[in-house]
Amino acid sequence: MQLRHQILALSVVPLVLAILAITTLVTWQSTQLARTSIDTFERNMLKAKQTELLNLTNLAISAISEIYQNAGPDDEEAKQQVRDILSSLDYGEDGYFFVYDYDGNNVVHPRQPFRVGVNWIDLQDANGDYVIANLIEKAREGGGLHQYLWEKPSAETIAEKLSFAVGLDKWEWMLGTGVYLDDVYAQTAAANADLRASINSTFLTVALIAVPSVLLVFGTWMFLNLHERRLADTKLKELTQRVIDTQEEERSRIARELHDGISQILIGARYTIDLARRKVQSGGEGAPEAIDKGADALNGAIKEVRRLSHDLRPPALDDLGLSAALEALAHNFTERTGIPVELEAVAFKNVIIPESKTALYRVAQEALNNIERHASASAVTLRLSSPHGRVQMVISDNGRGFAEGNRKKPGARSGGLGLRNMQERMAHFGGSLLVETGPSGTTLHATLPKTVFIKSAKLADVA
Image (tube, rainbow, N blue to C red; front, top):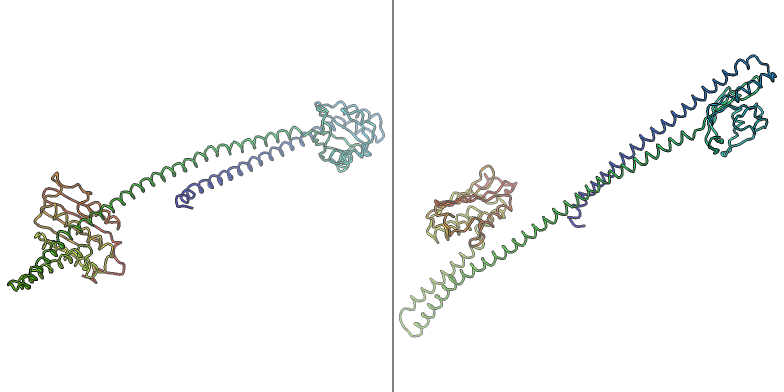
């Protein structure tokens, strides 16, 4: 996986995971809360039905209490009066009272008269529940609730029914009434449907928020990535072209130095030696003088080679340190141009890292070259110090600066590196290069941070 893909994964995947986690948590909590509410609602409805059954049963008992209390175990007349009263107690299409004796024979059933006088002790519902037997058992125990499946008169369908049965022990009768629970379950089912709709709505809402967010992050990343890649490609092309230009300029400079300096000196030395040879062969005078001139020319060539080698990579920079290399650079500059250089330098040998020394030396070298070619200065000052634990080099001249129209702008290439490349050398180590110019001269400030110092070294050790 490429780096940009890893960055995309690190930015998008946590967002997606967070959205999924939040959605799951919110959905789970909402579902649990809704289900708890639905369960509570169902329990409350069932309790209300149970209370209703108790009230209805008490109402029926109150209606027959006087007759039942005054009748004997075999008082058929009293039993008939009670049958009539219970048959007449009606509270809706599906609300009625029923009576069975303890043997399972139906005594009263207003909605299903065909059951009267028939024994139903073995009657089972669709779930295999012995309905009448269990109701009689509840009555014998002193009264209780029992839930079973029974036909609903108004709809002529089988539905859940909750009944309360109480015993009339003197006559061995079971008196009961019931309510159907399909309306309770219908309301519960509606609540569950609302819950599912709410969950779907929540998922839809989260999707409407999450998907655009993910697309926004992805789109932003793609835009930034493409933008950065274009900038990087542009900078790389510029850097490559600048390196090529710098190499070509340096090659051109070396070629000029070789042609205009060493090559001319060697040609002159050759002519001198040829002259001396001819004089020796002819026996004429002046041969020693010609040989001396040739030797002087060869010495000049040797010096020119040393100077050129010194410009490419001064040995003093590696052997003696930055201060000594700058001193040699200033001496050669004065010797070549006649412009005096005032040098104030702190010895940094083995204190700052070699790459930083090279960068500072090249900046000083290029600055002096620019002064020689363009500044028309009569004096130069070079100071190397360590203020606040940093490395600072200040080069000043009293020339004409960049004020004239024929001067190059800061950042343009002059000779070798140019001010822009000098700035890049400093920036590579976290430093800076500032140029102050005007009609009275130019001052260059090159600064490197503390990080260029070797940790184990101390300034006091190399003072």
